[in-house]
Length: 119
Image (cartoon, rainbow, N blue to C red; front, side, top):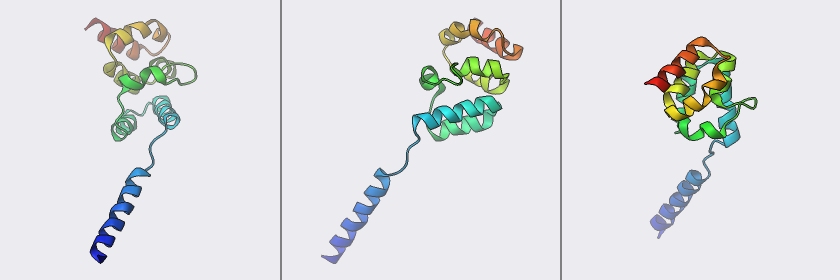
């Protein structure tokens, strides 16, 4: 009887700790991604995406940084490393739709976007 009570108590504690594990909120994810793009920190951005099991193509439409999508924001900030990574992860159609918006940004990012669209 003691063993059954002990096992059920341990199981209950384990289940409550699994259920109450904190999850990243959408606003924190968006803010973190915007910060990584602004800092042009590709390594930390990749690590953050991998840790939270996020794909750029799934969250691209929902994230705005200073009223701009991630690609336009990267272009305006001159974030070539993170911008190139975003270009490589997005579908060609999305990149071509945003090509006109990034024309005022950094030339290496424009070149990467043009190469992605033309390939």
